[in-house]
Image (tube, rainbow, N blue to C red; front, side, top):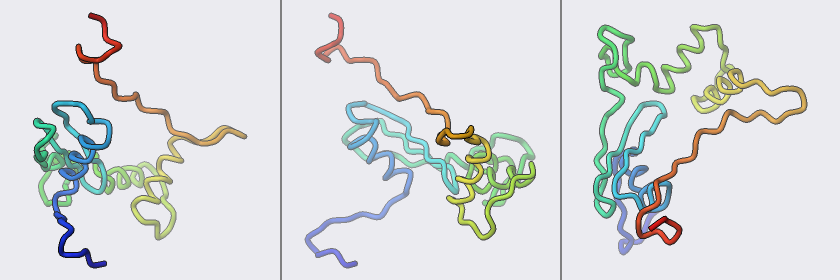
Length: 147
């Protein structure tokens, strides 16, 4: 697909663009700063300290969390990604006896892993536990805040 020359577009780091989108349209709307973490094949983060400016992407997945730990796909030992990235989670599941569907892509394999971790009871739809909703304390300018 070609965009007309009059349409501006940018190509940037996935964590950075996700973080900015959260600040503009998502859970970060109205916040002055935020850290948005992206867990996927890798582990990334976006630190936003100015809601109108761009966030700063960080390669959080390559933070050392264990000396002489598991080998990361970057080649180093002990990176967070070697423990929390999708590939690492699936590898640990296989080590524990889990079996993703044959030929499954990463997303399908992760879905199978979660389904195995949270089996449905008979007649009950399968849903993983809900994460707590993000809530900011009301600002003093909010109409329903105490004065």
